[in-house]
Length: 146
Image 1 (cartoon, rainbow, N blue to C red):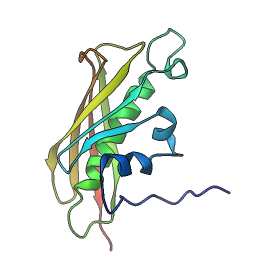
Image 2: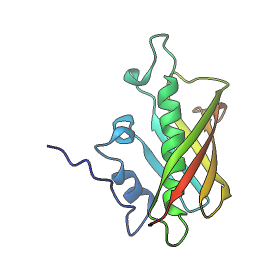
Image 3: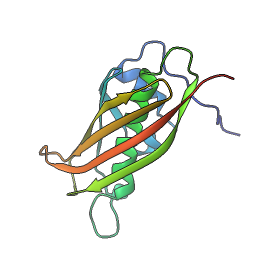
Image 4: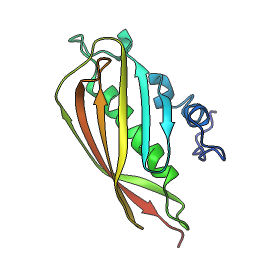
């Protein structure tokens, strides 16, 4: 039986350690890689591969959402308020304005609102030439012990 317990944020949240946290999980299957990260901003990327394309030959929308959502989730983990124990995604929204077929796709996720009980994160997803292909937004509910 595989380990299904949540993985804690590494004590030393370097890009390499944050990337390793995703290995063997869905983001790791995408080839997710953290480039830089702190409590206000996370930059992450993956290489477009044929298995990440939709039948029409364009990058699958779910891969784009997974990239942005994972980067925002890592940012939320890094910026949890003192006394909180985690978070849960309450809402996501994505506007697709382009696509990619090859190269590196990158996201830049930024904290838009950092409250005690809720965070809102936004992320742009960019193709290899730096053109925006999606605008992502998510709301995270902060969980605290009872």
